[in-house]
Image 1 (spheres, helix red, strand yellow):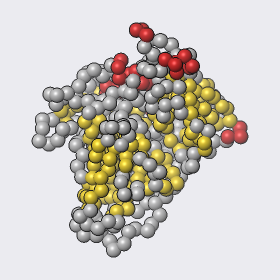
Image 2 (image 1 turned 180 degrees about the horizontal axis):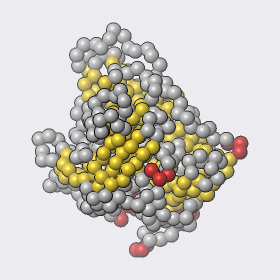
Image 3 (image 1 turned 90 degrees about the vertical axis):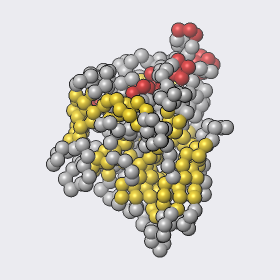
Image 4 (image 1 turned 180 degrees about the vertical axis):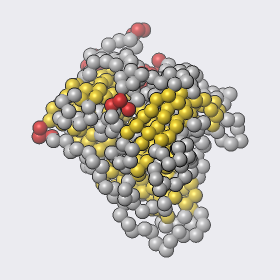
Length: 458
């Protein structure tokens, strides 16, 4: 199996190509600092960004499922930072939420993260300290937990999708955390990258099979991907296996979400396939192309199964569960929604984002739910706003049971669920990971402006 372009950090005995890992040890050093990246292309000047180990995205970390992992964060920035291992069911002390699970790692200091990943899949890592700017400037990287028995593919490729708000001078624009962005759709950029570079056509061969891992690292942009006449097969959502199926329309990928696709490429040589992002009406564009080159990789397409083995997640006991209603409110254009959900006004008469009527400040606040360990929780979530929200729960994955009262077809496991305006989504999970866990919108400006809460598992 070939790994896609980019720096791969593969840890553990018998693995190959270790970069940044101590020889013979399972420890990686991640240095957060300022660096340069070719966001606008190799022919234009590099752009000042923030990254890990001088890279954007940071090193692609690959660890085997069930294998102990250590990562030493060294902070070379001028402000405090943390690392949150997004989607992984880690011990609470390793979750990387400033002041809630750990103190921020101050400039010149270090912090050792160590855990054993129980779940295989596609995850990512990023700060939770001032994430609207730290992630927005490039502090993130992909984290792949490899299955014991992965499906047979010819190439395993990771695309970290992002957008950047660039100025006319070719640098990242300031204004992070602006009230306008916070109260509307978040910080949407004007420059799209794949792995922090302008999209470059992916060359493929007839009868090749590719596993394409998509990670949305954008602050706020939602991608709606149209693969034209290719029929990608979804095999995992947010790292968790799902019954293999083709999307019924554009593939929606909200901020922080991931999807694993199998692409069986059966066309003849010299064929081109466009991948378009069609989410924003009137602003559709070509994200990338698949271009067939060379001779066929084999005489016929692979017929091996592409389904993944399930991860060891506890099945919710819906017959014996605790049910809670969660209302998300506020935002610009949300005055009526705010009145319905009891949202409070910010200074200047502008709505703050709320969870059950409360606009959070900082990461530490009274939990909206306190539950004994091992209980099944069913959350009936209502989006009382005019905006989309990718809602993320730390420390757990949940089953998406229904949307607007209609049962979901695949009862997919996710850790970030995208809710459309006025939508109602029902999720369920076993609260089996003790600690105080963040529960928030992953449009990072919405989170900073109050759309976050805490669920306590005793």
